Amino acid sequence: MSEELVRGCFYIAASILFVVGLKMLGSPATARKGNVVSAVGMLIAIATTLAAMTQIKWTWIITGVCVGSVAGALAAQWVKMTAMPQMVGLLNGFGGLASTLVGWSEFHAKWAPAEATGLFTLLAIFLTILAGGVTFTGSLVAYGKLAGAMTGRPLLYKGRNIVNMGLLVVIVVLGILLCTQKLNQLDGAGLKGVYILLMGIIALALILGVLTTIGIGGADMPVIICLLNSYSGLAACAAGFIIGNNVLIVSGSLVGASGLILTNIMCKAMNRSLANVLFSGFGSAGYSKAGEQGEVKPISVQDAYLILEAARNVVFVPGYGMAAAQAQHAVCELGDLLERNGAVVKYCIHPVAGRMPGHMNVLLAEANVPYELLVEPQDVNPTMAIVDAAVVIGANDVVNPAAREDPSSPLWGMPIVEVDRARTCIVLKRSLNPGFAGVDNPLFLKENTRMLFGDARASVGFLVSEFKR
Ligand code: NAP
Image (cartoon, rainbow, N blue to C red; front, side, top):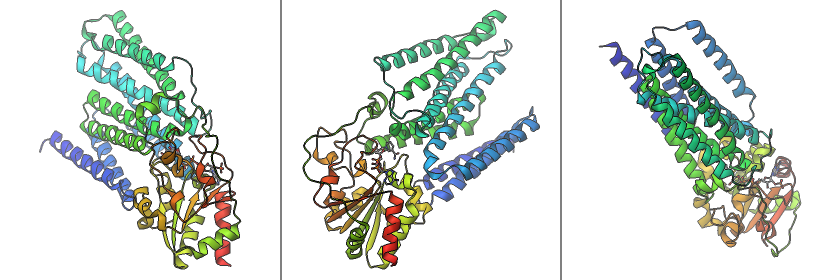
């Protein structure tokens, strides 16, 4: 068997593992194994690629592997669960930077007049540095917004969409200029000019990444991170075409496609279009509706305990506040106590609860909540009227009935968990402040709603103590 055939077989095996791993990531029950399966695929792909390289300086490779492994292992230990969204953003950015560097270095390697760099390779280089550059700086801004290092409010100025569009047009024109160069016919000065052109495109792509991301609100960053994830995949795919590496093309396409699918799912769950997320500057202004009827009814821990003690059907609805308070372990303990008390307990996870896809799934899995107790809004909403107690733990927008009742609300049309239709709804949060969307929540004024004010972890802890007493 030829060496190339063996290499192809290993690449196919790695690609199959990527696809199987991705499929397993679709369910919380198999996600951990899916991660391992994909990692094994990546190991095979890297080892096969390295084995095929003839001119290779192993000291550089080993140093890179050691530095990367140590940094990855430390980050995995140190980064808190609540900081995962920005961590994912940062990793996307590094992917984009790596692809940009591949495009840049391959241009160096291939611009020698002896080697005729054709239109196809130059196009692949252009797409790599464009997608990679935008991903890198866009991800850094997303990181800054999510980590609180910069304001989460969208930075808006008049005509920003026109400026961004204009910049993209300039980059595309420069790209066409780059792709139509006949490098093997140019002299030294000509080649230098093309090199400056390439560096100019990289610089403009980096600027475009910043400008397009600063105009988007901090809470839309998870959608943007998915989109940038997709871009980083496209950049890797294009880089695969430059260096002629099939497994990079396959893995890049998988990342590109899955990132796009996830972006679409999140937009749908918020009832917003991608264009609205990218261009509307959502989150720059609050919204409150005058004349809401009803009064807020605070409740003590003891009274909340009495309601839960009598409840036979309980639904927990976690949101961003549960992550902020790190209340997931206490919530799981309360769920266990309720079950032992004879109640049927479910945990309803809205697709955009929290600040990243699967945020609540990850936290509840960390607290060992059984997967079969996790349900989606469409599973509980039809039976909400027979739920004795819906317990909202630091969720706000995803339970806002204005999405159903008020056509003028920015949340209008967003599918929500309809806790307002439960027999009693207990909301655990610290104040009446709105959530990410900046929209007042009429749920707090409903007849059947009771507000248990305070930090979610402390409040759930008090409830647990009451049950244990
Ligand atoms: P949310 O609407 O942002 O509300 C979170 C609530 O948690 C706040 O109102 C806050 O109220 C409360 N809170 C904060 N810290 C707390 C603590 N220590 N203890 C108790 N409560 C605390 O959250 P959500 O209902 O989960 O909705 C998520 C929002 O993010 C949606 O608007 C969604 O569209 C958006 N989003 C999510 C994603 C994603 O991937 N998940 C992506 C894009 C956008 P107090 O300050 O009064 O305590």
